[in-house]
Amino acid sequence: MNLLTDVEVEKALTKNMSNQPETKMLGKDVSVYYGEKRALFDVNLNVRKNTVTALIGPSGCGKSTFLRTLNRMNDTIDGCRVTGRITLDEQDIYAPTIDVVELRARVGMVFQKPNPFPKSIYENVSYGPRIHGIARSKAQLDEIVEKSLQRAGLWNEVKDRLQESGTGLSGGQQQRLCIARAVAVGPEVILMDEPCSALDPIATAKVEELIHELRENFTIVIVTHSMQQAARVSQRTAMFHLGYLVEENDTDKMFTNPDDQRTQDYIMGRFG
Image 1 (cartoon, rainbow, N blue to C red):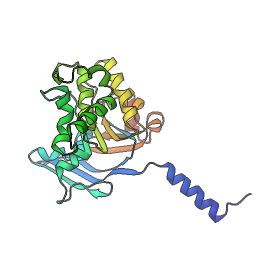
Image 2: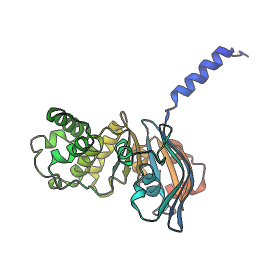
Image 3: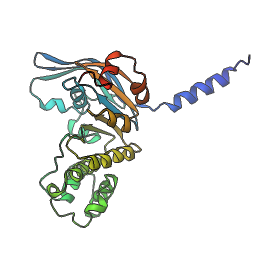
Image 4: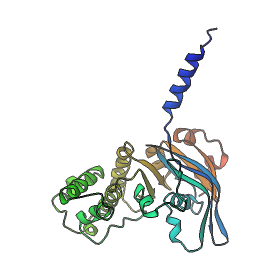
């Protein structure tokens, strides 16, 4: 039997560690209360950098509630209280010193229904960079708008009508416009709350393809009711049930050999 030297062991361990994507956001013992009602129970979840993490589970299980804790959208709900710790690059996002506006620029959000501003396509994308002071000139703003629309796979469809209203686009185009609006401010993380639920199959396929491309530059967390979508777009999947995180693992394992019977039953359509 060949024994590895200490140096070889260290090299092997280092190689193993380097193959693991680093943590981008981390939830530790996260609980959420709406008044007296507890909606989440001590959730621990590691969101890995440049990885798509899918949150699955039946309606009302807490997956969207957890998603909203990641950029403090729950702050906007009266009576909502979050306990535990959530970090972005090891910095506590609920610390008193955190600028919530800046946080939401770093952790962008795409909602269930497309919600473009009632402004031009150009204004929809340029609004964020302008108010955050990212662009110093009209030329820089033009460049950001073009690049963001390209990243959202929309540039070729709208480049000749940038001054037309964003609300005049099709549903799928509106959702990609909202994604362009989110990426325009240079976020590190993009949260997506069932971004395809209001879209037809062709528009859904385009958004899913876009998610694959965006993963090269962004960390993505997506809530979805579609098991097929979770299997197609994500590398990690987390299963929620009745406010608890049941399990979290590589997507392939979750869909072929989950550790918890509840995950198996949900994926097989036995409840939910």
